[in-house]
Structures are given as structure tokens and as C-alpha cells.
Length: 171
Image 1 (cartoon, helix red, strand yellow):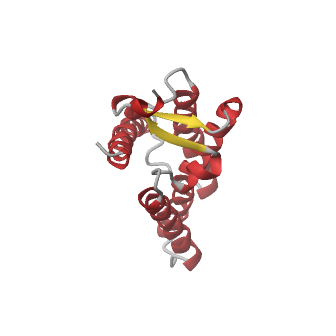
Image 2 (cartoon, helix red, strand yellow):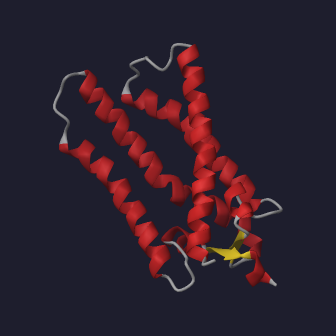
């Protein structure tokens, strides 16, 4: 199975965990009455970052720097994350995951402002639409970079000096 297909299936598995965690958070927020709270955009952004983004990024970092060097999805698909400089593996994995999840957090920013302007009955400013489109463009470029790179490396892999490999290639 090609590396690109393995990476795609691994991402599907990993994001399934994130979706389940997000649903759990939503259930808790609903129980405590926070789901219907009309938080200001910055407060909503901070709450989302502290409760969803930072825990998700932290899990990915811990999994990829740990003994298996792989998220659950990567483990199932036989993949590992390696650094070109093993002495910098932890720092490289942190940088890799920040870059990988950056579009996600940018999109959250746009959504918080979109909901805010909708609640206020105001027109959505152009900058909010730009903030919602930019992460999609970044993810498209990330995916395109994986498809076009001969070794299946994304831009965030290159920028963080890491690569995802099939374990058989390490032997």
C-alpha cells in the first residue's frame, strides 16, 4: 500500500479520535449550560484552544515523540514519524504538530467571529471570510505537497525536519 494512502487512512483514524473527544466536550458543555452561552469571540477562542486544540496537539506530540513515534492511526497503518536529526526529535515533533494544526486553529478563529457577527445581526466582514478561507488553502497546499513530493512529505514535515515512513523502510 502506498505511503500516501497509509497516511490518509491514519489521518482518518486519528481525526476520528478528535471528533469523539469534541463530541464528549460538547456533551459536557451542554450538561453545564455552556453550549448555549454566547461567549465573546476571544473568550470562545480561548476556551476552544484550552479545551480542544491544546489537548489534541499535546496528544499528537506525546504519541509521535513516544516509544512508538506514531499516533494511533499511524500505528495501525504501520507508520512512524522520524526526525532527520534524532537529537532534535521532540522539538521537531512539536513544531510539526503546531504547523499541522495551525489551519485548524485559524478556522476556529473565523468561526468564532462568524457566529459573533451572526448573533449581532451584522454583516459578516470580508476579513472574517478571508480567515475562513485561508486555512482551507493551507490544508490544500499541505495535501498537494504530500502528493507532489517524491517521498510523500508535507510542507509541515519539511519545515519541521521530519518525515513519515512505513516501518518496513526502517529495516
